[in-house]
Length: 161
Image 1 (cartoon, rainbow, N blue to C red):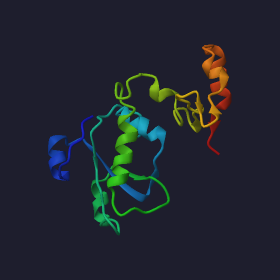
Image 2 (image 1 turned 135 degrees about the vertical axis):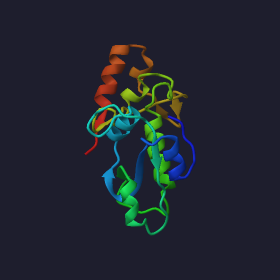
Image 3 (image 1 turned 90 degrees about the vertical axis):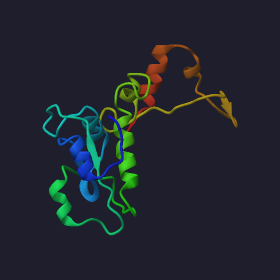
Image 4 (image 1 turned 30 degrees about the vertical axis):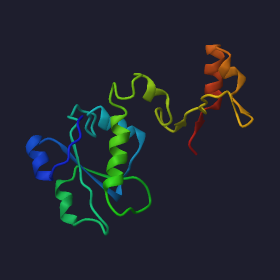
């Protein structure tokens, strides 16, 4: 997956099978499952597809309804309105690209984080120093006991309500 800026027609000349995304409040609510599907290059029916997408970025009051004739996916990021489609485009791009193998470094990095398995929330994260303003890293995480650490992480993972 490679990002480039071009007009719709120029992009379609480069890849006529590229799918067109329109960020719009009237679209399907974007989620991690959709990001994974796009990153894997699958179509809605689960069939293999390419991973080339064209993201349209309408401004202010929306878009001319006739544009829908070229749109494959209408995507909403939530119940709010922005001044343009650039921020939704960046969010869509970032959430998809980070799932492409090799982008994050560790192959399992994206598999063990929030929303990687439905509505799960990842366990709390801690870094150094071990004591920050009187707040300490839980002892079990410093123990080196991988079994106990895994148990702690499981107990402290949550679900979106």
